[in-house]
Length: 278
Image (cartoon, rainbow, N blue to C red; front, side, top):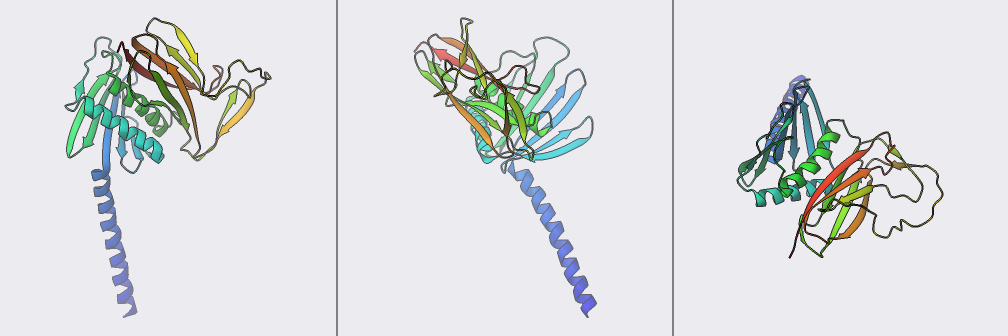
């Protein structure tokens, strides 16, 4: 009798586990918000990134048969969803940017799942200039994908309130570095007084301007020594930058982390801003 009860309980446990596995798989399918496939290049790259509402990312290298899963903080997930919605609002029927030349380039196929429908976006490294909304999402995806694939040790990106301004308006922008891993990220600063990020803005007329964080005084004297810093697992560095636009056209912002050009590992993020006359 005891043996029968034990077998019955074991069978129920196995069935519950099987049902749970099936439900989990179904849940994952229902929760998927985006899927990006990157292919081409000199090494015939073929990678797929799947994004879910719970912040998980599944990475598959289809060429080398490698699979990995990771997760991003809730704040980064919300930033991703916000940029996704911005692109959907601007191009609800999708977008296709054909290559304009060259034989060795990467191809990007992005599928967004929202409100029961799938919207696709296609572009390459040699396509025409991306619309701001696509570029804004693609820049964040680059940082997240690089972390998910193991190329980056942190997630680094720029964020702003909007992508289009009028002349005379002030840009409010944040540079964000997040360590979602379980290991310390160690880096060096030229001096204890230097900020963690170096931000350069290129104006429509070609002038390059270095931006400094709000409250930072670039004229402050500081002892010239190298300082070692650590971004611990789960921690975030976020600095605010402001800039008032004085001419119309397209501004390009380039951000680097860490600040020092001689850093062994350095991450880059870009942002394009359009400024109108009125």
